[in-house]
Image 1 (tube, rainbow, N blue to C red):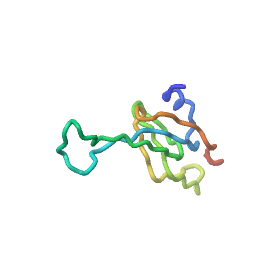
Image 2 (image 1 turned 120 degrees about the vertical axis):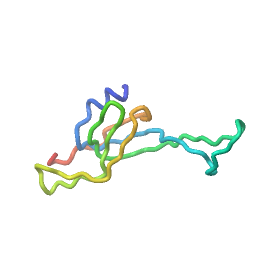
Image 3 (image 1 turned 180 degrees about the horizontal axis):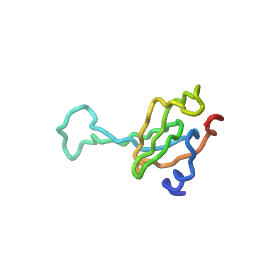
Amino acid sequence: MKIKSSLRKLKKGQIVKVNWIDAGDLDGGTSWFSDGEKVFKEIPVETISFYYGHGKENLFLVRDIESQDRDEPYYNGPCIIPIGCIKSIEVVGAPPKNQ
């Protein structure tokens, strides 16, 4: 299933596991390198978090949902993942009961 169609099925507060590739960087911290050096790397990441929403280009997750006030929960620990970097997304838990 395609990522964007998977995102459309998600509900706010569901716990999701996202496998994605983070942007690489230069090994060694220098900006000068030759063609023979392998200085760029892709970083595979697995993120487990609450689904908050998504836009055209990005997935929005949060780490915490504070729900003392059921009518207006507060969110903490935002995480933004570019949709083009996502390899897979899976629902692993239901939203909190007060969501």
